[in-house]
Figure 1 (spheres, helix red, strand yellow):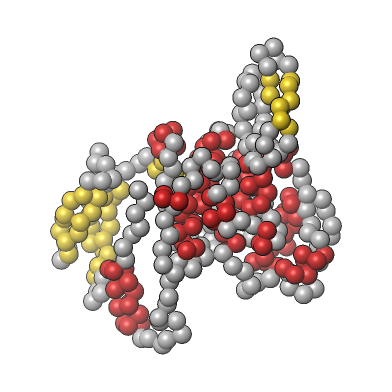
Figure 2: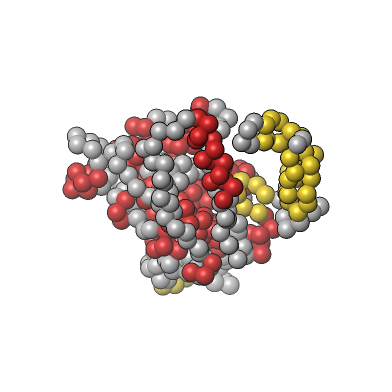
Length: 323
């Protein structure tokens, strides 16, 4: 099977294409004045979505969680540097390669979801990873909503299930507050729309819920991320011993990502610099781009003009270097 670095030129319909060799059996679908559409069979099968990984019900080691979260935040940093908010994060937008996880490198693909299988899937996809301010103060949010979604993904990697599975917006908020607790009244007044109110409830113990979990057969944890304060491990004689651990842990990062107040969540730069991700953090491998200036904002164009504009934007796009 061809690797992703091998390319070939092929004629399909009236157009010539230069494609990775993984794409075979090309068939023309349609063509107009500005574009042509073809169908191809992707022969590369080692990629799969995190959703499929989760359904295996096999716990992730802490370092795999660290690699995946680093990879996602790294890609998100590039998006945010352009002034773009991803807004709809979910497991079907994060792809990993099994071989790469084992060798210590994870590649993340961001898929712009233009097509959904069904309205029900679309609703759940948006809601379960949706930041609370999108519900409590619609229209007044910023790029920090993406950091909340990453927190949900990190929690799901630990629990192997979506952490907040609301049936509707109100139930979603209830699920969120059952997890992180109800914020103080000053935060509610500053962050939420006027008149918002929820009954008080405590925050769950993140160390117990997301921290290291053990079984009776292993010294090493079988799931979870490093908790805050002190955690327990087993000696050779199967005696439980406490060790002091750094307060800057996976739980610390997760807690900051799942802050109700978006002002308390880290930026992508701050998240990448967090000690939990420090093992992979390198500014040389975390590119940014120029802030997008949309010269066509609020300008009226015909449909044909918009097609031409979009086509030229695609033609002139230069992908970033991720080396």
